[in-house]
Amino acid sequence: MTIEIQPLPIDKRKTCPKEFSFGVTFSDHMFTQNFDTDNGWHDAKISPYHSISLDPSAAVFHYSQEIFEGLKAYRNKSGGINLFRPEENIKRFNRSAKRMVMPEVNESLHLEAIKSLVRLDQEWVPDQHGASLYIRP
Image (cartoon, rainbow, N blue to C red; front, side, top):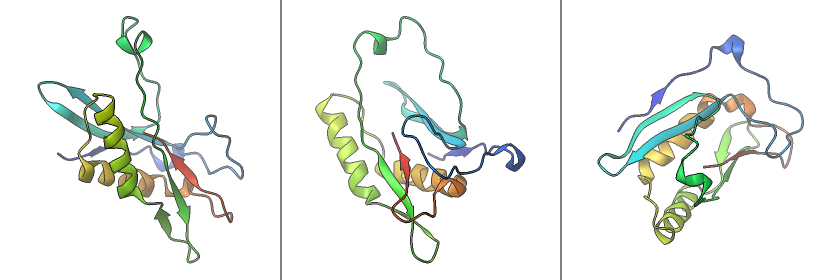
């Protein structure tokens, strides 16, 4: 499966703030993919950050399940970007999914999506010592 990338035009992109607020400050892009029992995970896409529309009868409102496995992207001494143990993060994600009887993600595609998203939003990775961009599933 390939990941469709729909980048926000450069002139529409925001700049990285000096300070982040968890759950308040969001980068320019997001990764999404759909799942159904016939096709599994499909329609992988990185697109501009946007609201998600849900049907009022969506089961999530009644029987919510959530996997909270975020990871960090941070600047190294030479200014490049490192991800903190992404392979282990994806394995934890899949262990959680299995325990919750949720579909597991394709590890290589998931890693490709994280790397592509960080490459696209690299300006959002702060350069302050000890600061990082937090990436949530």
